Structure formats: structure tokens, C-alpha cells
Length: 549
Ligand SMILES: *[C@@H]1O[C@H](CO)[C@@H](O)[C@H](O)[C@H]1NC(C)=O
Ligand SMILES: *[C@@H]1O[C@H](CO)[C@@H](O)[C@H](O)[C@H]1NC(C)=O
Ligand SMILES: *[C@@H]1O[C@H](CO)[C@@H](O)[C@H](O)[C@H]1NC(C)=O
Ligand SMILES: *[C@@H]1O[C@H](CO)[C@@H](O)[C@H](O)[C@H]1NC(C)=O
Ligand SMILES: *[C@@H]1O[C@H](CO)[C@@H](O)[C@H](O)[C@H]1NC(C)=O
Ligand SMILES: *[C@@H]1O[C@H](CO)[C@@H](O)[C@H](O)[C@H]1NC(C)=O
Ligand SMILES: *[C@@H]1O[C@H](CO)[C@@H](O)[C@H](O)[C@H]1NC(C)=O
Ligand SMILES: *[C@@H]1O[C@H](CO)[C@@H](O)[C@H](O)[C@H]1NC(C)=O
Ligand SMILES: *[C@@H]1O[C@H](CO)[C@@H](O)[C@H](O)[C@H]1NC(C)=O
Image 1 (tube, helix red, strand yellow):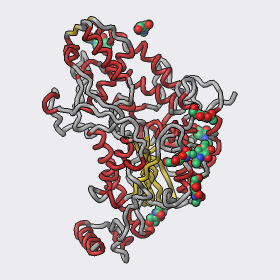
Image 2 (cartoon, rainbow, N blue to C red; image 1 turned 60 degrees about the vertical axis):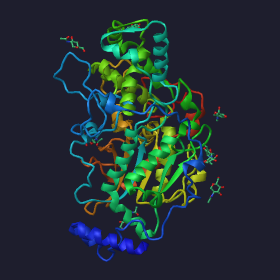
Image 3 (tube, helix red, strand yellow; image 1 turned 120 degrees about the horizontal axis):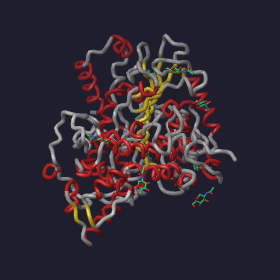
Image 4 (cartoon, rainbow, N blue to C red; image 1 turned 45 degrees about the horizontal axis):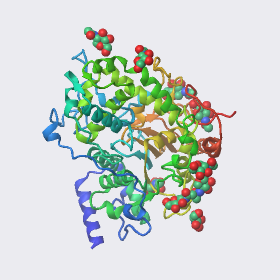
């Protein structure tokens, strides 16, 4: 039965596609190599247990059901920016009605991911498409969950309590703030929103469409891939939505093993390194970005706070409230489809809101952090292991129990897909020394000089993804090449990878890149950076590593 269906599928594929001559030639003699899954394969749920068996889902408070069809100010027609359909994203509060400004691209890690230009990092002519004369033979993907509710105890819920309290003691609002009179807090915590699910699903669809051909390697070896994630509920759902988009529903249940690594304080897990890297949770080490960003916010929203204050009595708005209301704009839009808070803020406010996140991420998890490279080292070492075909040594947050056996940690897949958090994606980019993402002076604490290429919404948005392509390019020497792509932007490595020449497509010799990354891994001292007592401060590009005293 299985074989019969597979044979039929092969006929359908051949009848419906007009293969290029190269594809026809490479498939000649093995017409079934494009048929996935290989006959007789299935998921072993004892080896790869589901969420209900693994446990450690984290908090899962649900919110109110969205009801945009009844309550939204406009209908979300699908005629605009695909990065946020079906969310309603208004123009900023402004004195300039002519301007078109997509506020959702200024929400830092709360932005929906959008395509970034290679030109932003110095490769104006590069495209993620396979360069002329090259064929892609392997793809590695590290991606973030889609849009979620606020994390537990974040600013929006505190602000909601302040409003509820003020309402009892005589809050009066007018003008732009009239909606606050009967506004209630409707958000849960931690979980993916419906829109967030769609982001991971669509990413799966897009990656199947672009890289589905690589599944033939699994068919040749009679295996199915292992895709990894963490045990938090949103992380499990992220991997499942990605797999559903990639393989289809219900096929994904049989066609990919989803490996769920436990995420909880004290346990090794390359997808959640902050759980074992103690300094990542110390204010003057892993938290210097939060401090400098909070300080920036003290001065950045004064005129807006004054404008809002003039339309309210019985409450005192603070800079923290301004950030909370901007976050409500982002979170309500993601969860409910739109937010009345978005209308309160100007273009300048959204630029400052983005910069608040730029500071926070540059210094918490970017090159300005003393613990980012250490936290990214787990993924870097796993990645190198996949290249060198040897299991990694545990000198980072990786969990050897999962990484020392080819059942749980296959070393020869043509497609890898690991789900994680935005902080870990950024930690990994720093560990990979992709310094073109951060070129320019360290971010200024006051925001006066925006001269660094780093923009949080381009690197750590919802569903952000870091892709590696391994390629065969017969006309190049050596023929085995590699390159890195972040949200569709090809990243140049000629400046940070010794021995990599300037290349318009961001390509470099595979072997050379492996040796550069091995040197990089060796210089990252997980134990020192995560556990030693040193002093770090904002304003320095540490290249992600702790200063030596
Ligand atoms: C428009 O707003 C900007 C700041 O957001 C301000 O500098 C400018 O003076 C305003 N223009 C008018 C005509 O009010
Ligand atoms: C590795 O993960 C497993 C379960 O996910 C856990 O039981 C084990 O304690 C972890 N190892 C370390 C060193 O954290
Ligand atoms: C890291 O923190 C945990 C929890 O507080 C503690 O048990 C552990 O000893 C710390 N590790 C080191 C190396 O200091
Ligand atoms: C903004 O307001 C704060 C008080 O909340 C004040 O301390 C600060 O000096 C003001 N900054 C500017 C630039 O006006
Ligand atoms: C957990 O991580 C620590 C720190 O790198 C390492 O020493 C230890 O061997 C790891 N344990 C496992 C089982 O991976
Ligand atoms: C992998 O690591 C686990 C936990 O440390 C150990 O029990 C197991 O024997 C190791 N397996 C191999 C193949 O080394
Ligand atoms: C996948 O198969 C193709 C064709 O056999 C081969 O060129 C390529 O190297 C394989 N990829 C991996 C990662 O083994
Ligand atoms: C790296 O490549 C960029 C353009 O792709 C070029 O502007 C730059 O000069 C090159 N740097 C080095 C050190 O080769
Ligand atoms: C990382 O990149 C910088 C340039 O940005 C370079 O000076 C440094 O040598 C690189 N580190 C490694 C280990 O290759």
C-alpha cells in the first residue's frame, strides 16, 4: 500500500512538473529519489516523546478570545504587507498625514519578521537564491517562535493593574485616551498567538517550497529528519507548526521526529543556555542592556507622556508606562488583531521604541554583552559537530545526553531545523562572529548617533531565522562553499573570517569556514564568561566575550 501510493506520487510529480535539464539529468536512473517519505519510516514516539510526556511546559495562562470582526477599527484586507496579514497596523499619530510608515517594523523583538536587504550589511547584489553555477546540498536553519503573549510578569500586565486601580479611585480620560475608560487587559502569557502560529507554519511552507528537493537525501538513506525544539509550550507548538507547514497535516506526525529538549533552570540545553549560564541573569553582566535601555526610556518619551497626561487625571504616567503602552500596541495587535494603543504614538516614538530594543539586545545578547558568545557556543559547537561528523564536547550549555548518539543527534542530515528563542539566535550570531551585523561604533546610550548596522527588529523579530546554505559550485575553487543568511539578507564574512575573500554572493570555502569557526569556538570560554566575577559596562563592543581583569 505504502509503495503503491509512493509510486503514484512519483507519477503525479513527474506529470505536473517540467524539470530543468539539470534536474532531469540528476534524477535520471533514480526516479523515486524525490519521493518522500521513504517507505516504511515512521516516528518512534518512545524515543521522541510528545509534549505531554516530556513535561516542563512553563506557565500557560490563556487570554480572552479575539473578536476583531466585532471590535476592530478596520477589516484586515490582504492587500498590504505580507509580513503582518491579518493584523491591522495603523499609521503613527502624526502631524504629517502624507507619510507612510510601517510601525510594525519598529517593535524590536516584538516585530513580525520581515525581509532584510543584503545591501544593509554590504552585499547589494546578493540574493538568497542559489548563485549562478552553484547547487545547494545542505541547509541549516535556526529559527525563533512566532508571536506570543507577553512573558510572565512583563510591563503590560503591571500597567493594566495600575489602570484598574486608578479606575477605582477616579481615573478620568478624554480625547485620544477615551478608550481607556472601558479598556480591559485581555492577554494571557507565554503562549503563541494565532498569528504567531501562522508565522511558523508559513516559514515551514516557505522552506519546503525552497528546499524540499533536499528531502531526497533522506529517501536515499531511508531515514526521516530530527528537528529540535525546547519543552516550553510555545516552543513545542512552534516546531509543530513549522513541521505542519513543511510536511503537511497530518503527514508531519509521521514524517519528522521532533526532539523536545527540557528547558528549565539548571538543565543543559543549547536552546536555552541562560538556564545554566549564571552570569546571564546578573544585572551588571548579562543584564547591562536592560539597564541602559531603561535609562534611555527615561528621557525619550517626555513630550508624548506630557501629551497623554494632558488627557488624563487621577493617574501619573511614567516612562515605564510609555514603554508598557507601546508594548501593548505590539502585543494586542499580535493577539487581538489590532490595538487602540498604537494610535497614541508618533513616528518619533516608534523610532525611540525600536532604539530601546536595539540597546537592550545589543548589550544583553549582542556584541556588547560579556555572555552572549558563551551562550551561543552550544549551538555553534553542535553545528560544527554536524560539519565534522563527530559528537560535540560539552564545554557549553549543550546537553551531552542528547548530543552523543546519532539517533538523537544525526550528523549527516541534508536539512536541519532547530527552534529557539530570539536571545539565543542573537547569541549564536555573535558566537559565529558575523560582525557585519554589528558594524560601526557600539550603540550610544543616548541614541544621539545611530551609526551601527544593528537593528533589533531585523535580527530578533518573531519567527526570525538564521539560515546556512552549503553549496557545490563546480566553477569555484574549492567547489564546496558555504554562506549565511539572516531573514533573507546574505551576510558578508570577508571581514570577520580570515581567509574568506570578498565575494558578491557572500560565499566562502566550506573548509576554511569550518576552521575559522573552530578557532572561534576555542576562544569562547564558557566557564569564565558564565561564572567568573568581572565587571562589564555598556558602551563597549566585547565581541560577546567577558573582559579579562
Ligand atoms: C511635527 O512633529 C514634529 C515632531 O514629531 C515636530 O518637530 C514638528 O514641529 C511638528 N510640526 C508641526 C507643523 O506641528
Ligand atoms: C539533559 O537533559 C535531560 C532531559 O532533558 C536531563 O534529564 C539532564 O539532566 C540534562 N543534563 C544536564 C547536565 O543538564
Ligand atoms: C549557578 O547557579 C546555581 C543556582 O543558583 C547554583 O546552584 C550553581 O552552583 C551556580 N554555578 C556556579 C558554577 O557558580
Ligand atoms: C524627561 O522627564 C524626566 C522626568 O520623568 C526628567 O528627569 C528628564 O530630565 C526629562 N528629559 C528631558 C530630555 O527633558
Ligand atoms: C553541562 O554543561 C556543563 C557546562 O559546560 C558541562 O561541564 C557538562 O559536562 C554538561 N553536561 C552534559 C551532560 O552535557
Ligand atoms: C551519552 O551520554 C549519556 C549521559 O551522559 C550516557 O549515559 C550514555 O552512555 C552516552 N552514550 C554514548 C554513546 O556515549
Ligand atoms: C544530498 O544528496 C546529494 C545528491 O546525492 C549530494 O550531492 C549531497 O551532498 C547530499 N547532501 C548531504 C548533506 O549529504
Ligand atoms: C569585504 O567585502 C565588502 C563588499 O562586499 C568590501 O566593501 C570590503 O572592502 C571587503 N573587506 C575586506 C577586508 O576584504
Ligand atoms: C571575528 O571578527 C573580527 C572582525 O570583525 C576579527 O578581527 C576576528 O579575528 C574574528 N575572530 C575570529 C576568531 O575569527
